[in-house]
Length: 462
Image (cartoon, rainbow, N blue to C red):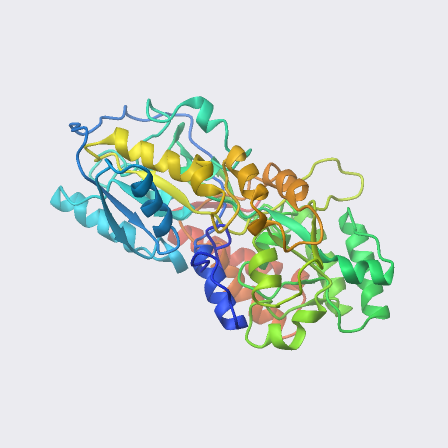
């Protein structure tokens, strides 16, 4: 379950009739498998060589590569701009960690032609698209902050949401959507049982244990999905994927921010309040979907988990802001999805290409009906005002979504490899075998380090 908004197909919000279909729906809408789907990265102090545009030919046809979920948006742009000359190509959009785009761009680099002008992809794609080629040629992605997109537009995106786009002092993409983590809860049951919505992790832990005693079988969370660590450990400011330098990854899972999160979850797992089965695992929706009292997860959980997969009736599910630790004032949360749009540095019509990606990411006309929460703040307001995105819920989710959108922790970095692989290959099997998260932290850290080294990173553990 990964994302482009978010997480990680909302094929135009089709009605989903089975839990399996809901998983497929969310996967397509949320760029299934994109590395750390919001992920951030630190840029180097050097701005690199100056950007040299290709010879420009205004009014030329531009080629646009988009996934099937974003295809209607590109078609809507064409309809709203009948003079625009677009050649639209549908591809996987980087879903499931696909390297199709990178492989094709490498081929075009060798042949000297064929590059698409505009592409939709995952934040992981930006890690290579923003770097010079092996031959030393300029990056595939054009630096949009270099006379292409105005600073006022860039400043309009949610705080930190463009961090995955920023390398070497430039911004190489515009963020389409984000999947900020909030606290979801069943308001009907909370009211019925007289429970208060927690605001701190300590309250969440205490309530979870109380629920386990008073209403056995009911759950306050899951750590069993391939992206569960992004909801909990990313939100907990655990330095699992911290690029302290462009070539150096710090992964320190013995940091107190990691160990306290693991300890809290271990206690809830032992109490059977948090399950090690994935929300999107086979059979979960049928067997336990109606017993999820709370879920700490992305903004798309409301529509794609509770409504589509669990089929929870309308006006029961509500959203609350991210949790904080007692005694700490900083609000930090994770992100489980979000795609990006890039303009090719080889485009012969940068003006038309830039106009397209700007419209796709910032236009109310497009984003108000988008499948997932827009990264552009003004467009997000239009999205929230759309009844299709709000009528299902028991409260106004806007305040929680907006607070979380500006609180995504940017030190969980965007790397050249997926942050989900080590969690899925090491942690989830350990949990299934009955081991604790705390006991598994060293093995998880080791696997992250191994993957980082395989991708050419130096690894720091402190």
